[in-house]
Image (cartoon, rainbow, N blue to C red):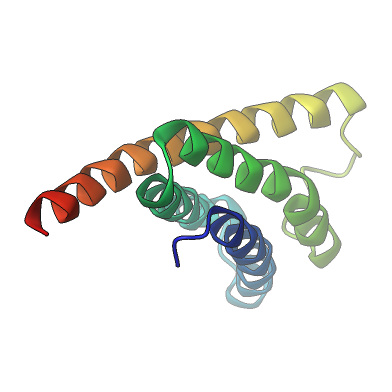
Length: 130
């Protein structure tokens, strides 16, 4: 799986699926939904690692940012509908939502870039070994 668009698309699908499963699990098992953040970070890192192997660290950062953006928009919307994604009784302001989207996108980019560094290193080792 070296196709960058395919890696990104699978990452987007993985993050939305993860958000749905984490939301359902949070409600069913009665755990605090933000604990699932670690799973999101693992997805960002995995997408970055695979994208880094296929392309470059900067492309891995973009892939991580895309996954973070989709999580902060579509993923959050789905978890809001299921229940645990609600921030409180009040609907957040547009400014608060925009800030959250920017922060999650930047976190995705950063973690994706770190994964991309690991991916480039492993790709370099594989090339040297061949």
